[in-house]
Length: 297
Image (cartoon, rainbow, N blue to C red):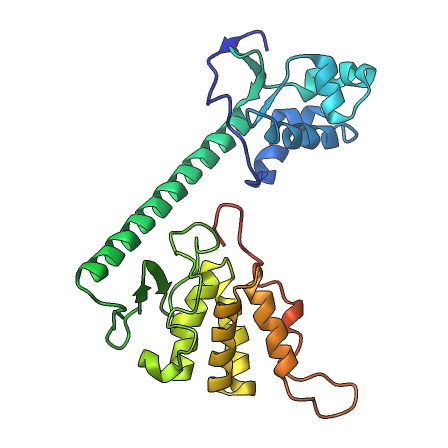
C-alpha cells in the first residue's frame, strides 16, 4: 500500500442501492483467500461489503483504527490480520485505499448507470416528439396499429398526457420509475367516459389504457395484466373497466393496491364454507416487486 496512484473515479461516486455481486470462483481462487485462515475469511467478505457502501464507492479510509471500527473488529485483532485482509489494497491521491477487483466492479456499475440514463433520456425525447407531432396534427389520440405477428405500440395523447403499451414481447424493463411516461391526473377520456366513447371494447380499453397507466405508476406490467385479466373474467369486462376509470378519477396514492382492494370487495362470495375465490388475495400481492431503484426489473 506504499504506492500512490491517481483516484480511479469521482469522489462522489455512490452505489445508491446498486448491488455488489461477488464472483465466488474468482474470490476462492485468489491468493488472498488462500492465505486467509477460515476464521479470517468472513472478515474479507465484510471488508468488501463495507467498502462498497463507502463514498467514494469501493474505497476504505487509510487509518487502521477507522478500518477496524468500520468492520466491527477490535483494533488489536485487526492489527494481527491486517497483512492478509489489506493485501492488494493501494493508496490513492485522495488519501483513501482502493482494491483493483472492487474498482473494476465500481467502474462497471458506473458504465451501466450511464447507459440506463441515456436510454431513459432517449425514451423521453422520443415520447415528447410523438406527443408534439400528435398535437401539431390536431389528433386528440392516436393508436399505432400493427399487422399480425408484430409488436404493438399503442400511444394515446390527451392535453399533454402520454401512455404507451408494449406488445407481447415487451419485458417491462425500465418502466418502474421516471421512464418518460407522464402520469395522467384524471381519466384520459373524461369522468363520464364509457368504453364505447373511446372506440374500444371494455376489455380492449382495460389493456390499452388501464395497464399502461398503472405501469407508469411503477407497477409490474405482467402482474397488473394478470390482476386485471382476473377481474375481467370474474366481474365482467364492463365492470372491470368501470373500476379502472374509478381509480383514475380517485387518483389514490397507491393505485395498484386501490384496484386490488376494489376487486376483492366486488368478488362474489366463494362457494364452500371457509374457502376463498380463485381470484382472491389481490390486495396482498406486491405489484411493485422486481422494480429497482434505477427503474429496471
